[in-house]
Amino acid sequence: MNNKDIFSIDSEKDFLSITMDTFLHQYSHNTVYRKYCDLLKVDPKKVNGLKDIPFLPIQFFKDHKIVSGTNTPEVTFTSSGTTGSTTSKHFVTDLSLYEESYLKAFTKFYGSPKDYCILALLPSYLERTGSSLIYMVNDLIKRSEHPKSGFFLNDFDKLKDYLTALNDRQEKTLLIGVSFGLLDFCEQHRLKLDNTIIMETGGMKGRRKELIRQELHEILQQGFGVDHIHSEYGMTELLSQAYSKGNSLFECPPWMRIMMRDTEDPLTILPNGKVGGINVIDLANKNSCSFIATQDLGKIYDSGKFEILGRYDHSDIRGCNLMAL
Image 1 (cartoon, rainbow, N blue to C red):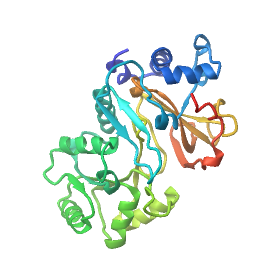
Image 2: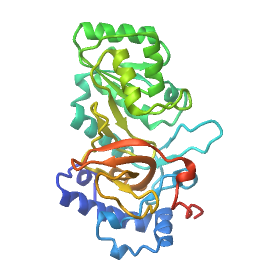
Image 3: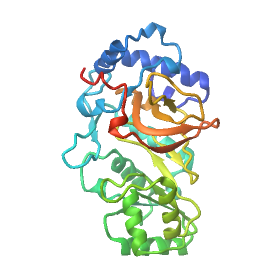
Image 4: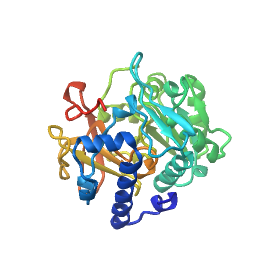
């Protein structure tokens, strides 16, 4: 299985075939994942479909080195975390997989980065090292080749001037920002933008009170004067992202899949329309672990799109008592 196979998926048959190959590869070459499967008494020969695959609790990325194989990591991405907390580490042995994944996904949903002036308001990420989001956005900014593309830390007046000038010239613009940064901006400035996509990456990072997505989007719509707020769903532990274009319903690229697990019985996969814990299949994670049980809650619709409804409270996390591998 090479990278081309992953990013050429165009049918359910292709996805299932590559997913099964990935499972067997990671069971054989990922020590932590294999131990987890063995503790669950999973017989790899009996894993014949997506519902049979064990999903590794995402917390394992905090305490274990999750790699499939023996290649040396080219980069280690780390989560932000709160002060004193243990951060997740994603050891990436092939950066080209990440680059191809985010570029193909962005192009699928938005077109070429060259079509945009790309502005980034990601202060909490810029203030530390090891952010996979900064790596991705920095590369998209370079690929946009627009002279005004770039990062902003806390210079809201300069950002307002850029947004206003680009809007007046009717240039397509993408502003991608962490939620608290976008909210801080809207408290100082009110705009009316016609050619700008506002994309939030979620999270208050401990800077502000958490808001439900609908409330957040209403505030941002009013502040930026736009009809829709777009969203990106990604995390340190994944090399792929899902996107929402304004209705809070996310769509995955073809090599990524969301499934819902029962919150009481995490080994049971729920049908569409039921609220559950979000499991992610990310085939771009072929050198780490492609099967991850996140701490997010959500719901999948029959269209295949999904909604993020919140996060587990730590006291609600069940089925993770195999953490001490």
